[in-house]
Length: 204
Ligand SMILES: Nc1nc2c(ncn2[C@@H]2O[C@H](COP(=O)(O)OP(=O)(O)OP(=O)(O)O)[C@@H](O)[C@H]2O)c(=O)[nH]1
Ligand SMILES: [Mg+2]
Image 1 (cartoon, rainbow, N blue to C red):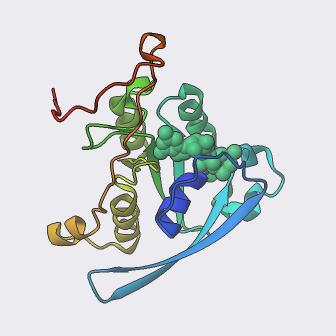
Image 2: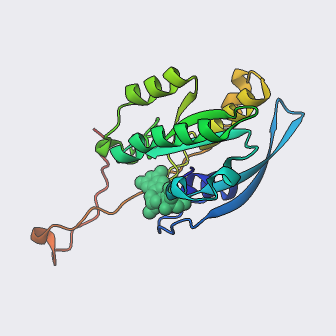
């Protein structure tokens, strides 16, 4: 179960504001390299959260090396739903169990503009505890700003291959994040009033 926007950010470097629900499964591919000379091709199956009820679920999970469980930090039920996915994956994986990771989306990591952090409904603690209790890794990303998307996926790939990423390699994966400038809403008091542009910028 992977939020499509994280995939678009990871594979295409874009963020899609408009919501297009995933029906069935979508496929994407991305090549990456770890430790300079180890090339990895990721064949990604993007399955909607509703697919848990699908009769195709066993086909979606069959042979997966990695399963990423994504939730939205502003939506508590998406976090609770992770438990159902963990049980479903355990039920279907008969042979080698996949590497699993719990990814929180819409987070603020370093940007002061953040994403939806002000509407957070699931604490980092809860996410980390759930991941630790089950032996999975926990990650925080924002598909909108792009923060941590590359590095999280890189860490998960390295974990799957049994590789420890060096600090330099991890830093190289940090993408440049562009802050959005959002125009403030015009209050009814100022409507029709032509304000002079200010030459002073105050950051508090
Ligand atoms: N603010 C913010 N919104 C996001 C982010 N990621 C996704 N969204 C929004 O959330 C909505 C749903 O995103 P999707 O990635 O399509 O969600 P999904 O889990 O693939 O949805 P299904 O395919 O229906 O399972 C879209 O309107 C996105 O614009 C994010 O990092 N920050
Ligand atoms: Mg989707």
